[in-house]
Image 1 (cartoon, rainbow, N blue to C red):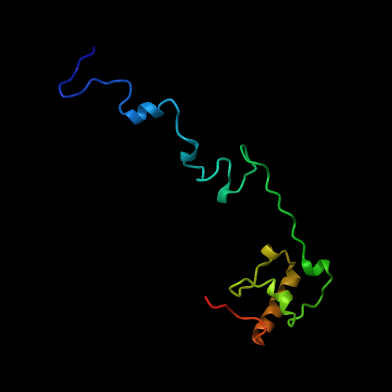
Image 2: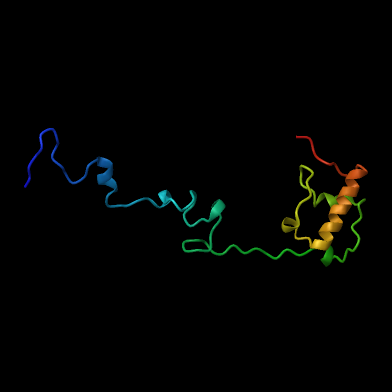
Length: 128
């Protein structure tokens, strides 16, 4: 049964030295196709995930509207220091999901920022 065909080398246990070395260990955890590269147990973006192997759940505090807690009804367009906290470096208005401002105060804040831009208290955009 062990006939050798001419021109072929007799088969040994493994075809290549790499296959022989990795045959017993299996694929590495970082080479898994569905897992992103980074720390083991890390979720998307390298943050710890709450799943198995993670470092615990990522707890995010509920954002509370600054204007509601301080009972500010009218947002003055002249208060540049207050408004600059809600404008990004490039001059964009920061969305409420990032600032935690409620819907009604976000609308009033947007109106105040636009008024301050029109009378040149705030820049429309910064230079790149």
